[in-house]
Every structure is written in C-alpha cells, then in structure tokens.
Length: 243
Image (cartoon, rainbow, N blue to C red; front, side, top):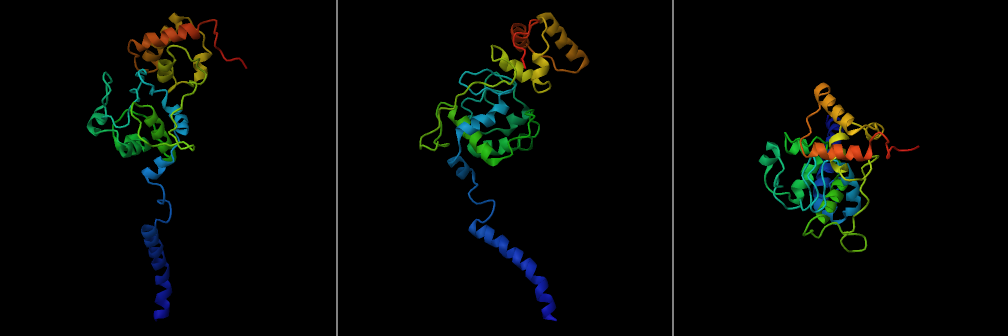
C-alpha cells in the first residue's frame, strides 16, 4: 500500500523543497534585485533615455517650466505635491509623505495603482532596471544628489545633458507646451504638415473644443502654443520635414 502513496507525495514535497531553498538561499528572480542593488549599478545616462517618454509632460532642468505635470528638478526627497502653483490632484495630496527612493520606485512602476485617481495617465515603467536608471537620472537633476548611480569609471555620472528631442517638432520657444498638449492625441506629422496662419490655427482649436471634445487650453499656454505654431508652422511651412 505505501509504495503507491510515496510516489504521489514526492512531487509536492519536491516543490516545497525548491520553494524553501529559494527563500533560504536567495535563489531565483529575487536575488540581487533589491532597490539598493539596482541603484548601486544604475546608469543616469540610460535613465535620461527613459525620461524621454516623460518630457511631454515634465521638465527636469532647474527653473524649467511647468507643463502638463510639475517640474521634477530636485524631486528626490521633496514632499509629494509640493511645487508651488501646480494644481495637484486629491489623489497625490492624499498620497502625502516625501518622494523617498522606495516610494518613487513603487509609484513609477504603476502610478494609477499606487495613487488611485491620479491624472498621470501612463502605464508606468515596468522594467525594474529602467526604473532604477530613471531614478538615478532624476537624482542627478537636483541640488544635492545622493551617492547613487555611479558611472563605470567610479565617479557619479553627472554629465547627462543632450540635445532635447521633441520628435518632428522643431526645438524653438514654445515647443515644450506644444508637445505636451498636442502629442498625447495627435501625431507630430499631423501638426507639422498643416501650415496654417495664426487665425486658422486658432479656428482649428475652437473646432476641436466644440466638435471633438478637446479640453480648453488655458492662458498663457494657449498663446504660447499659438506663437510657436505661427512662427514655425505657418503657411510657408519652413519646418515641414523634407523626404
């Protein structure tokens, strides 16, 4: 009788043993993947590339403008929802506390899950190493960077500046606001191929608000965008991409 029972017990007992070994000896996916481990080898230069997908809504330079989201210079360690003049959601106000490294890592992974009701309509940075690189980049863009994100040479990788990238939109005064407001719903090509007078751009805004349900663009942002479009995408289309 027992020779029939023992084989049936071997498989579940073996699985239990594997699970215990993983817990006791750090075997498997959890090994070497704590936030401290990830930040120890984080690369701010790679984090800058990750941040490119954030630039439509956030600036990160000291004194940078408020776009659809607040400026993120010095975000590491500062109180949540604390940028003067920015209208934060109740979700972030209720979240409270400070942007400590662990909380920021969790938030960046899934903003809507960590702070339900936040208008930050992005899916988050799923890859944990991308998040560490992004945090290292944000850390470098602050008045007192923490000793994380060390470059291969052994010194902090502080030189992370590069040419700003707004896709097909020409980098000129007003591009930040234009990119932030327009590209979440429209491709850059739709914008740059138009070629309208300022009056026609403004009429187009009115049509989109009345007929397409677009939210009204408040001042001074509306005038900044119109100034940009008039200067760079007027009827002569000086910045239309030539193929």
